[in-house]
Amino acid sequence: MSRRAAGARFGVSESSAIRWLRRVEESGSRAAGQLGGHKRLKLEPHRAFLEALRAEKSDATLQALCDRLQAEHGVAADVSVMSRFLRRIGVTFKKRRSSRASRIDRT
Image (cartoon, rainbow, N blue to C red; front, side, top):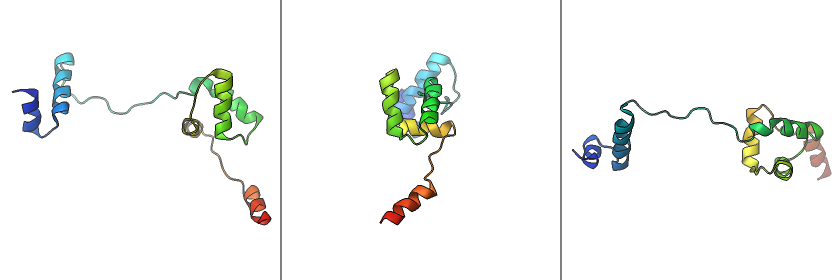
């Protein structure tokens, strides 16, 4: 039976049947492949630098952190990457009640 016919027979796409059979031929294993897993953080090697920047200026914006990382280490990081990295290492940005209240008083 061809791979495409096997895909049709078992109700899966042709490409899935082709990949599964290729894996069986290459590895001999019929077990499911690995899903997910630990994803290495792109910014982890620069953790000490980023923590020092935050200690220097605790209210720095994500964009400012990205810009300094690019300027000093040549590593391009998007704001979303920086945000995910900081959340994973336990740094969260909270709005302060005092700054919110001062903005309300001005209006």
